[in-house]
Image (cartoon, rainbow, N blue to C red; front, side, top):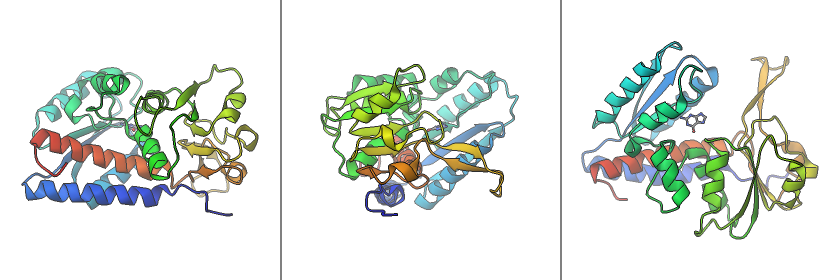
Length: 299
Ligand code: GUN
C-alpha cells in the first residue's frame, strides 16, 4: 500500500503539541499551571478509553488534569451542581463533560452550564453562536477543529472547494459546516451537509473535492462515491462485531479505506488521522482558556 497520500494525524498532532507545550511553559514561568477537569457519567466503555487518552496527553504536556466519575443514575441536578463548583474554581481552566450522557440527562442543559470561558469543547451556546457569527473569540469544537487544521497543515485548499460533509451532528457535522463556509482564509468552501434523509448521498459525494465522513456508518464511503484526487477525511469510529478479534469487535471508520485510498488525492488513516488531532485541539483550547483566564502566557 502506497502511503504517500496519507494525512498523518499523529505526526501533525505532535507539531501542535510542541506548540502547546511552549505555551504551557510560558504559563508556568508566570506561575500558572493549566487545569483541565473531565467529568464522566456512567461506564460507557468508549468514553473511558477517550477520557483516559486525553488524561495521558494532558500529563505529557504539563497540564494538570483530574477526572470525576459519577454513577450512571446521577440526577441531572447533581451534575449541574458539580459544574457550578468547577466554574467557580480558579485552578480549573477547562471543563469537559464526556458525551454521550445517560438518557435521563439533557446534554444541552449540561453544556449550557459549563462557563463559556472554560468550555474547551466549544459546546456552550455562546461558543456555538460565536462560531456561527464567524467573528472568532470563542472555542471551536475539537473534532471539526481538528479536521480543519489537518486540511490546512496538509495543504488542502478549502477556498472555493466543493465540500461534502456526511452527518449533521452537533459535535462534528454542523460545526464543520460552519467552519468551512466562513468568509475567511482557509475556508470559503461551498458546503453540502448530507444526512440520513438526504436523497442520493453518493451523487453529492462524487462532486466533492473534500469529503468529511462523520455519520457513524461503518465503511459507508465506497470507491465509486469519491472523485479521483479528492481529499477524504474519516471521522468515524464504529465498533463492528468480529469473533476473530480478541475483544470480539474491531473499530472501523466511515470510509472503506482499502477501496478509497488508491483513488483519493489525500486521505486520513483511521486510526491515526482525526483522532490524535482532536486531542491536540483539546489541549490547545485548554491552554488558550488558561491564558485568557489568567492574562498570562505568550499567546
Ligand atoms: N464525545 C464524542 N466526542 C466528544 C467531544 O469532542 N467532546 C465530548 N465532551 N464528548 C465527546
